[in-house]
Amino acid sequence: MATNKTNFKQKLTRKQIFNGLFIALILLLLFVPAAKAFMLQGLMEIGLFKPNLTYKTETANTHLSSIKFKNAKGEIISLADLKGKIIFLNFWATWCPPCLAEMPSVNKLYEQFKNDPEVVFLLVDADSDFTKAQAYMDRKKYKLPVYNFASNLPETIFKGSLPTTIVFDKKGRVSFNGEGAANYSNPKFITFINQLKELKN
Image 1 (cartoon, rainbow, N blue to C red):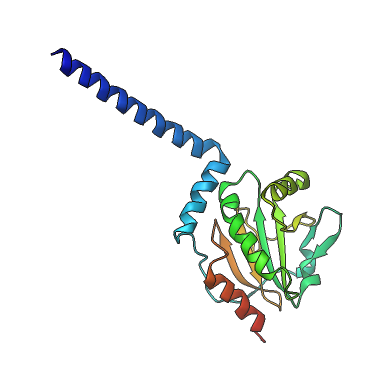
Image 2: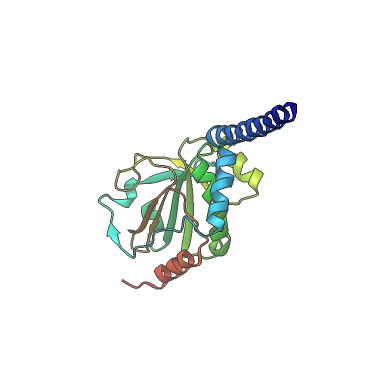
């Protein structure tokens, strides 16, 4: 009888430990953005979160010259200034786990095209906090160019969901508009960018 009680206590203890670890893991994922980002990165590595590529070209319902961003030096750039180039525009924040999860893939994409004069990257910090955003980039050793808002944005461009990534073709048309984390170093997305480079019309 005593042996049965001992076995029961051991099983109970193991169950309590397992439950405690499970609860700790859930709390970690809920309250630590880096932990959730790490989990999402792992899911990306096994092939989930591919960008949903629909080869479309939509003309923005607003003038590109009214959409402006500012870098840490205070230099202001409008999307109209970048006409003739492919624009990879990403809205993110340091507290946003899906944003942090997709950032390594964004950085890989940037590394592939950083010396290409036809492709421009704008990483727009939704909090407009250069210090915090740049500290994150420096810590991760990313060279991604950080910008802040310098104008209001139409909802056709950004509805407020983070992360949001928009790709404009050389004529300033929206060719990709994706909400939520995605793996932008995916070969299909790289092919998509290269196809936009070759697009004549």
